[in-house]
Length: 188
Image (cartoon, rainbow, N blue to C red; front, side, top):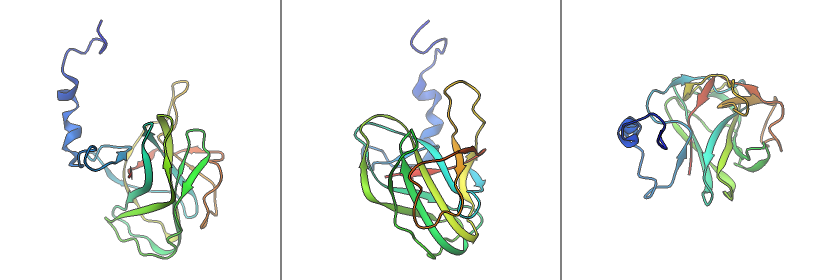
């Protein structure tokens, strides 16, 4: 048995399809993403005023100043609040964006939410990127479908929490509920 178990191939070759994502080299343009750019589809975000959080692995030393979500086939309509936030693995608020209020969000459009203060990551691990949109029609997002955790210690890839969220992100992720659809988020 080797470090790679029974796998006898070259991991770089086996995972090469992930490099087809076309993302910039992270040594040139810093970014972290929760999903590769392949195999994505149109997924619902969350109901109006409900926060959707997605697990995002960040490394010690990363400095996160913005979160980007990409709308899919459905544009937002009659938007009143749009915020993004970054939470610790324990669910404590680290930083949030300014509310984009009624700013338009067309279909198939990336929207970057600058955090009010950049967050320097001091411990590698899972963090949570959050998005809450209050609107008559919440835009759908580019994302994937994930399985519900079943192993001890395994967390949700996506979850929803809260209601009636407006311009201010909750201080904690309270009573998260499993969400099968996992939106893509890019942290820069």
